[in-house]
Length: 169
Image 1 (cartoon, rainbow, N blue to C red):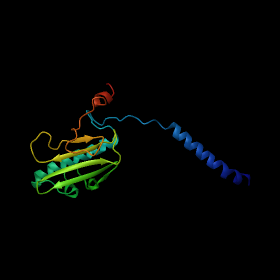
Image 2 (tube, rainbow, N blue to C red; image 1 turned 90 degrees about the horizontal axis):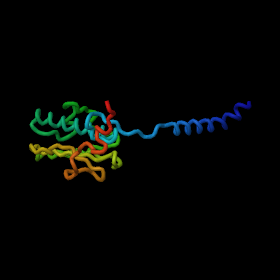
Image 3 (cartoon, helix red, strand yellow; image 1 turned 90 degrees about the vertical axis):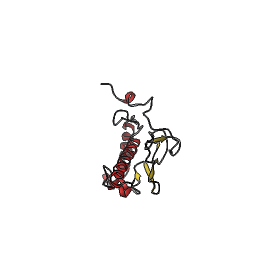
Image 4 (tube, rainbow, N blue to C red; image 1 turned 180 degrees about the vertical axis):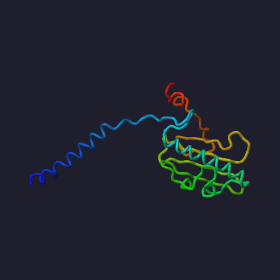
């Protein structure tokens, strides 16, 4: 009988103590670990977004070789190269895909926009016009606004570059 009176009082206290201990012992946010040499990403979310963009751009190149034009929808790209049907979804974790085909010109633009733009969630942009220009299809990044064709080309950060983040052998 006494146990039934004590349990409603003790259980919430034990639950609160457990939550506080778990929160206190949780490790501080760790720095991003590069996924490969010269990885330009600043977070796991950026690495996933950039991986999606690279896969998309490679699939478009393959699609163009096979069909003599670029795909005009994400669904058209499914099963091309490594681009899967699951990748047709425009919601990609912390990012949203914005794909704009220009069928009449056989060009396209792709934009990866984070839910919150900041230093570790930059916006990414690529435009392919089918020219042989060096920057055709280059991924551009911006941590202040949605990236566009005027944003700087994505490079490894000088301060947080892969060499500075990688452990020494």
